[in-house]
Every structure is written in C-alpha cells, then in structure tokens.
Image (cartoon, rainbow over all chains, first blue to last red; front, top):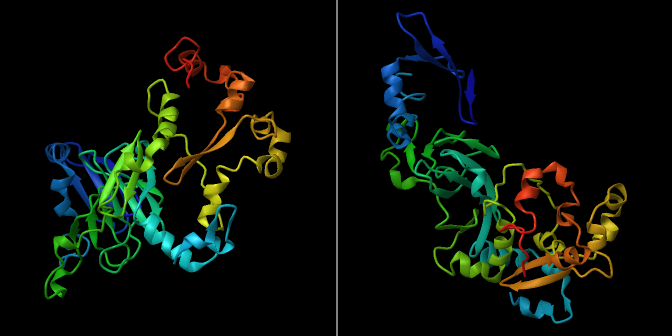
Length: 67
Length: 283
C-alpha cells in the first residue's frame, strides 16, 4: 500500500520475516526502509505531531552528513 | 490616485478596469487590508488537511492544525520565496520546500534546514512562514486579513451576514458542508467584472439561453422582464442577486433547486417540508 502526498511517498506493508509482525515503511525516493514493532508503533500512536516535528528536520534524515 | 473622479453617479470611467495603477491601489487598499474568503472549514476537516488559495496576488495555504485551529500561511518559503505547496489540496503536518528542502510545520514554524553547518549562524525558528495576522469564520466560511488591525469580520460583513444565515438555514443541521466539489472559473478579465456579473440579472437570457433551451431551468423566468427578482446593495461593497421574491411568486417546490425532483433527496424533502423548522416561512 502506498501513502503519498506532494512531499513524499512511502510503501507500507506488514513484515513477517522476524519472529513477530512489524510494519515496514519504505521511502519510495531513496529505497531506505525501517521496520517498526508494535511497541514503537504504540508510541507513535500516543505521540503528537508537535513532538514528531524534530524528526522532520531535513538535517537529521534525508540530508544528514551520514545519509 | 483619486478614484472618486472616475466614479460619477451615472457612469464610471473605463480605466477603472484597465489602469495598472488602479489595480495596484485595489490590491493594497482592499485585498491586502480587508477580509478575503479563503476556504470553507469543511474543506479541511481532518488535522493536517490543507488547501492552497490566493489573497489578491499572494498565494496562501489554509491549514488545519493538530489542535483544530485554522491557520492561513503565506505559500512562500521564507528562504527564497519559492512556492512551498504546489498541490491544490492535501494532508500534511509539515511542508518541505522543493527548492532547498527547508521544512515547516503546518502552523508555519521552521522545523529545520539541510546542511545547517554551512551557515555561520544556522537559520532560527523566527524564520517561520509569514501568516495572515487575522483569521476568522462565519458559518464555516473562513476569511483572512493581511492587515493586523481594522474592523472585525462580522463588522466587515455587516448586513451580508444575513445571506450566510439564510444559506446555513437551508440545512437541517444549520451548517453546510462543501464536500461535493465546486466549479472554478478562471476569468481573463479585471476582477470586478466577475463580481459585478454575480449581480447582473440582465445577461442570463442572452449568455445562457442555450442552457435554458436544453433544460427546464428556472433561471429563465427569474431573469425575465416581469420577474420580481432584484439586485441588492448590502453595503461595505457587498451585493446580492435576490431571487426569493420570484421564487415565492412561482410557488413551486424546489424551484430554487433547479426544480429538482423531491424523489432525488427524500430525506431533505421530508426535513424541509412545510410545518418543519426549516420549512417554516421566512421574511
């Protein structure tokens, strides 16, 4: 399943390769992906967009020195 | 420029529609000072929803924040003034400029910039998006003003609030939703032509005659010589073309809705039948 807006498009799927289900999110632009387990997803469900905003700092992700 | 000399009791000067200086004055004195309709609240129901609109020549983003508040932000990156949001509508809690990647929350705060170490002083949070200093709504119709001071929205609307009241009053819920889409007209003419056309009940029998011929369309009678319809000056620059007197004279069910068959909307027909609250006679 694809989720996109004018700024990004990601593919999401349930990844069952581990010992338990995880949600795999793949950035269509870079091909990089992350697997989030239920406890991590619960934390996301309980957080606010304001708290998430620092993660959207482009210097931390797409254009970080490590990227 | 003194426009008074261009506006006389029985005629107006054509330059009001063509002179670039008149247009520049209209932008600064009207569009960038007064209240301008930007969106209906039902167009941005979910937190993160946004639509892009214009106030005069300034592009703006109308956003619904996480706390439900509506913000009207200038759709220009605070870095190089590039258009930030390109889409007509969408859902995003952050906007990233396609030019250099500067990223902002949907309330206009600067989240961060790529390669901040390249700056002697990294860009600060003060470099958020410019915003309309005043935002207010009436019956869900969201207006913004680019001026920090001046009359409030209700004072600006004045008697015209009654037209919004009547519209909301047609709904059993007392509020309308703009969820079925709408038509956008791109008019290659001075903006006043489009406004004045809305209160011109004279032209439909000529411009729209082919439409009347193709369908049993109620506007034909509404705009005829004997019709009781009237154009009304509501003050503050507000006007309306009021068909109600002619609707009443014709006395047909849903003549105001294109004589649509009640079978197409039985729930609404029942909710608005005579004897119900919204079916009660109005002034």
